[in-house]
Length: 212
Image (tube, rainbow, N blue to C red; front, side, top):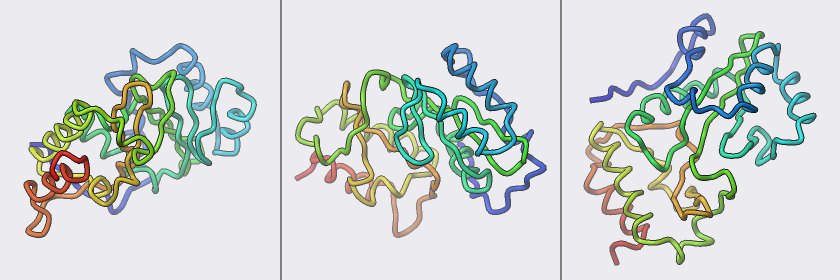
């Protein structure tokens, strides 16, 4: 069973051991992303990163700290804030969770405070991420079942992502294949008496329209 530990005190001097390791999917990195990665590695802080991003016409800005190139996503932020997100992706990626991004690379900047994350959402290269509630009537049964299967994979490890059951407003859909996607993985929890696997799974099925 995968052990989940909340990160309470992240030490800056542990950057190399915690973050500067490439994932198993790095060999699938696009050549352009590899070049960008190498550029980021020489930067001192996020100001340098934003100057580079602003000058790169290939990057699409999705949010203040999130940029897209094909099916790769570049997220910027502080090490302290993003460390739970990174550790949780490292926990769930081996489970082959379809609704979660793949962690490609973590790049701590030289000031030892800022970090750049590169993730990948397969099959999203020529697609956009749209709110689930806008297209929920068009989501096929198989996509909803895949989403439930992802919940089961997490449940077998004794963990779940509370933001999923919180509201369908937190769900996204990859437009070209109708796959349900969750962007926020910063908070994984273990089950307890009030939040049991069967209860949450039933609730999730109701939210998907699989139980009326």
